[in-house]
Length: 310
Image (cartoon, rainbow, N blue to C red):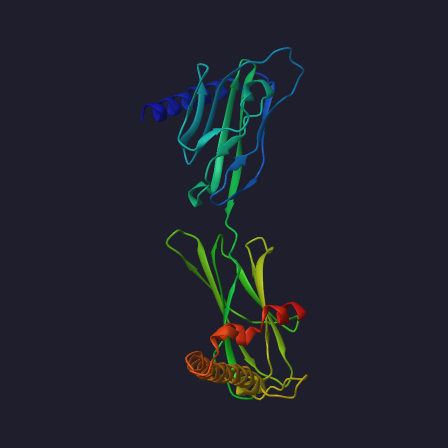
């Protein structure tokens, strides 16, 4: 409250100075520009003090930034009094005469007109600056029905959210802009907008390219999504593979058959291996084996001399 009171008092005092200065010539001029601020990013209101005549020295005694008659940043008695989130954009503003306002973490409430008043020992001046807050729309999401019939009419829906101000969705079919498509804008809890639009389309004999483009309030493209809608036969499972001539169902069944054959072969191999090991186990205990010629392992691998020969 103390900071706000100082700002209001300073504003009143400087206003009196301006009124009393009508009979004299002001040696300074405050020039401010319109600016664009990005939602959830830092924004700057560009404002410079220029001299109307060459002066050897100039002392700034007061600066007031306000919006809707509410002081946001004040300088008086060589002390800066900022509200949270506001500061001078240039630290050496009193030497460079760049009194631009820096806004941290821009929100929708920062949208609007600001006033900057500068008081010096050679005169005073004020100017206004407008900040247009924008938020970039997210990439559109395109949804379509899961099942359709040949030559049927399908309804496509496109949605894009978290943008500001109100934007527009545009449909393109095979690069041709579709006319008379309505965009519905709904305000979200954050104050941002959600856009939605519907397109009715009849499937043809050839694939169709569908594009949904989201434009911001400045008529610039924020993002887009593009899909290729197959011809109507695709949705019936009648699309043919141009390489093998098999339909979609065959392409799914073929790998299953191959995998099944491999599994059966593996099981058959394990069964035969088990029978073989059991038969060899019986031979290891056969009474006709001559102990002087070695055990079963020697009979299978052969004598050391035969192994070297091999």
